[in-house]
Each structure stands twice: as C-alpha cells, then as structure tokens.
Image 1 (cartoon, rainbow, N blue to C red):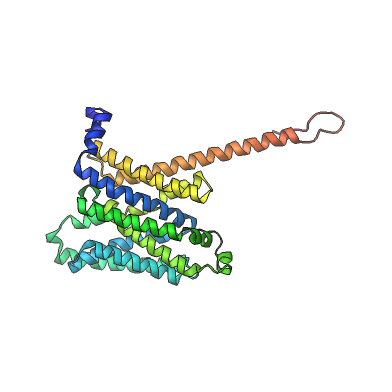
Image 2: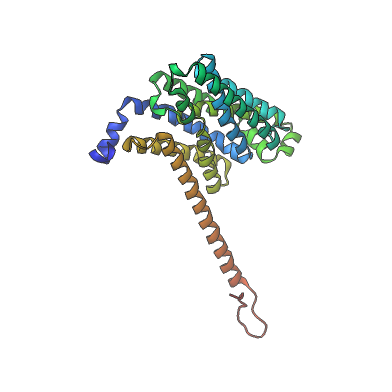
Length: 311
C-alpha cells in the first residue's frame, strides 16, 4: 500500500506491479486520445454524440458476446459505423440532436435485446463480462492487450493530428470553411468515426457507461482555462492523463474504491476546479474594468473631482 509504506516506496512498488504497468500503458494512451478528441467534441457542440456512442459501445459489446465473438470486434464495429452514420446524416458533418436522439433510442433498444440474449444463452461462460463492459476492467488488461490498445490509440492520435487544421477551421466557422473548399461534411463524418474509435478503446479501460466522463470533463475544463486552440488541445490531453493516473493511484492505495469511479470523480473535480478558476478570472476582470472606469471617468462640472459611480 502506498500510504502504509510511505509515498515514495509505495509508489515505486505500485509502478513495479505488472497489472498496474499494463493499466498505465493502455490508460495513458487512451487518456491522451480521449483528451484530444474530446476537445473537438466540446468545441463542435457534439457532447450528446459522445454520450450516444457510449451506449453504442455497450450495445456493440453485448452483441459480440451474444454472438460468441471477440468483444473488441463488436465495440469497434458498432462505434465506428454509428459514428460515421451520425456524421453523414447530420447535415454539414455536424450531427443534430434529432438524429442523435433517434439513433440513441434505437441503440438502447438493441442493447436491451442483446443483453437478454446474452444472459439467457451465454452468461454462464463469463458471468463478469457484463459488469466489465459497463464499468471497465483497466486492472485486468493483459500485456498484449495493453500494447494493442496503445498502438490503436497512437493511430487515432496521428489521424486526429493529420485532420487537425481543417477540422479546427470547419469547427469554428463551417460556412466559411465550406466556401474555401474544405469538405466540411466529410471531415465531420470522419471525425465522428474517430470519436467512435475513441469510445470503443476507452470502453475497455473505464467502461461503456463511464467513458463519456473522460471524453467530456477534462476537455471541457481545458476550454474554460484557455481560448487558444492548440494550447487547449495539449491541456485537454494533459488533464485527461492526470485524471487517469490519479484514479489508478487512488484505486491502488484504497482497493475498496473502484478504479473507474476514481477516474471519473477526479475528472469531475478537475472540471469543477477549472470552473472555479474561470469564475475568479471573470471577477478579477470585472473588478479591473470597474477600477479603470473610475480612474478614467471625466471630472464632475465645477468640482474638479473625478465623478464616481454610485455604490
């Protein structure tokens, strides 16, 4: 335990543990991808799409389990296909609420159906699979699975960086981007396909029901802390990674706390702290404006004194 043996020796022991190493290898790559993709999700106002894809991940996983195939096949096939469809049906590459809501309701129905099939036919072979799909099993990732997860995440990061400039242009001003010849609809669909890959990858670590928090909270915090896009991207990835590492450390130190709960709680605290910092900045800016107005206000006629606003 970290606290029982001292912070330094406890952390050293933790980092030398194989299952923690596997968790941090896969988790760090997933967190960086989630932060980068999530920054654009928040910027484009597609947070609802991320929430829908989290449920798609659950339905796809259960479909794969019910069919007796690899869990990851269902995850990636369902999330990527639905992400592309959302982008293509949503107009200029931005899936609207009606499209997402309709798809969301249908996917939930499919999830219930596949859950019924799995529990009645195949649950006896893997009774913990349903819980792992819902809440993740980052401490149960093997060395080979961790390497695969890291490579997939690195591929997603490379794809996002290659798409970065036109995606940023299309996200900030889609009308001007389209007039300049940027394929806004294609880029939007490709981006939601990438969101699907991120959702599928993150589901394996923190669960289908909780991946939305990692995809939204740290990137939203980055938006509150800076309005510079490239700095915001880096900050979103750093905050997501910090949430994951802190969650793993807390779960290792306090085994009674589930690791996915720890990661999501810390991600929420990061967002709350960013909101507080942004609020304090606004208060200071408002106070500075009031003080500047008082100093630069014209003198009251006949008094030679500066006119002051009423308290």
